[in-house]
Structure formats: C-alpha cells, structure tokens
Length: 254
Image: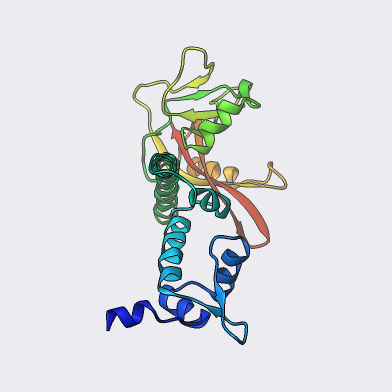
C-alpha cells in the first residue's frame, strides 16, 4: 500500500490541503525555481512523492524565516554550508528573542503603572512616598543613546515643581541608575517629608491646561501647605474632547 502511494501523482489542491500551504504559494515557489514539476496531458501540475519531500523541506526552511532566495542557494549547499545557515538563523532568533523579552518587560512595566493610575483614581490623595530618587538633565536630548534608554524603559519623562518661593518646574529623565558623565537636574531630599498621590493631567495642545490647581486647592482647603510636586509620565489618552498626558504624581504636604 505504501509503495503504491509513493508512485501516485496528485494535483495542487491535494498538496495544498495535505501540507497546509496555499496553492498561490506553491505556484510562487515553482515560479522561483525552488521546485520542478511535470505536467499531465491537460497541462495540470503533477505532484509526486519526491515533490512532497522537496516541498516539506522548503516549508520547513520558510518556517525558520529563511528567504526564498537563500533557499534557492541552499539547494546547492554542502553539509557544512547547510549547518552555517542554521547557525546564522539561530543567532538571528536569539537576538529577536532578547528584543522581544525587553519589549515584553517594557509592556509589563507600563501596564503595572497604568494599574497604579487606576488605583490612584479610586484612592486619590493617599499618602505615598515618591519613587524617583533623582532626575537626569535633558541636556542630551538629541543623543541617540538617551532615546535608546528611553525606549528600553531605562529612562522615563519626569518632572518636579520646586517648592516655594520659586515654584519652578524642572524636567528631566527619571532613571534607574546614573553614569558619572550624566548631569543631575534634581535630587530628592530625604527627611521627614509627607506626600500624597494624585493623577496629573496635562493637555497635549495647551500644556498650561492641567488639573494641578484643582489638586492644590483641594489640599489647601484642608489646611495643608504645598511643597514639591513630583511627576512621572505614564501614558497618553483622550478624555472627552481633550487629549491628555497622564502622570503619576506626588504632592508634598506641609
């Protein structure tokens, strides 16, 4: 029975269904010279047992992400050349896995921060300690390495509104660590200090339009003076007709 199957010829529909490869892809591979087929009297393609084996090899290599051009060259490779192809692909995949791992880590970090925003929205003005020990200066704003760190999650946009009397804003990068050549823009002063959390919203089109005064007035009405205000950028989203930048924020109460 098995020998009969080996000598049987089938059409493109049968091969397509058997291997799960679209007929259009099979025709393309043939047009690119990856496989040679005979034709029956009515000019239909005939697939043999040998065709099936060839196609399974091609399909396997394509599943590995190896290009059609490389597969065409692969068909003339020695055993050593073939192994080199697999080793090169292994190196590429390891780099992709590392990149995906970093992307996944960034995504989880962002989702965790968004979960925190939801918690703060439900529990506003709860006492909490800022998690930003320092800010790095934006002096290297057009430095490629700086943006690579931002995209990898090592740097985040952050800012501090200094306490009275000047109440000026200082913006920089919230970072996990600092190199000797990275200039500090601000450092958190330790001590017996008290902060409450809230969500700062800044209008993307008009950055003077925020909910900061609302938060300050709420706390002042309860007898507090305001010190430093520390913010960490989380995400951007629309609410009503306005597009807002959302920040996790801490207001120092005195």
